[in-house]
Length: 164
Length: 208
Image (cartoon, each protein chain N blue to C red):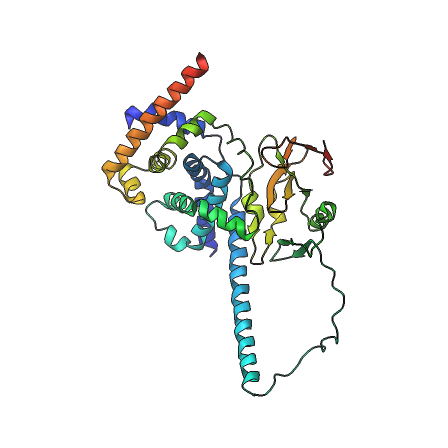
């Protein structure tokens, strides 16, 4: 147990920031992402025997966090009567992340955001990304190209607007 | 991936300040709370099964179970309902239950704040308004507040509160909102997201 705990602690320390960044990039909401990632790590620890043998344990955490989704958030906060918790209040700052970038990411289709997050923040290669999200490697390349092209277009427009 | 490097670098750089501050101990604590809750659920289920078996024995005319402890009082005493309860457990955590409905009195925010303080949980309790740090909430609400098995209850882990943080509890008739706030930091408070904010002093009094 002690060895497993140490092993998990090392994994957590090395992965928590990148997992949080990946989930925030997909959800666009840092607070929600932090809750989801904390829950996903708790589940990872509960199933550590299985997760440690996963091809990409950090991707397991990110996928679990994303799969929790908004329904988990709503259900959980109904259980603890926090149904409106922060929902009616504008989201807080995302720790220095450019709001224009967050907005541009949110305009991407969910699958493109996910591919982008796995490639950028978890450094997964095309094959592993494809395996993790259950699509063909070619589909990953297509999603990535489209996401990058849309971001480049969006961000250059935003910069132009600022300059003018 | 070379042709994407500029955009990928920009995204990576932009998110580089985002950090998860919660220590690994909070994951272990969360897992422990869940295991305890599961075990207590199993214990309650076993007790329910035992109770059902006893009831069945009585219904079928079997021997009555031996009574232990004091006999029940002949008539129930007066019951004073409260708007909240703050109790120890599970483990080192604290369970807060907020009761709502016509039979319960209005929540006294000062009484709740003092009760939480006795359990080592610094809080700002407001009724009909909700305050959060104007500069963004300190991270870690998910490590501090957990769902409870009890209806209308929540488990608060005071030890998981970041140093210098307080729990802001906004009590509304239809909901309760919570956030971590930083001591001394400017607060932004509002009755709803549409209405103008009011300023709340550190003691919890609103200034309109």
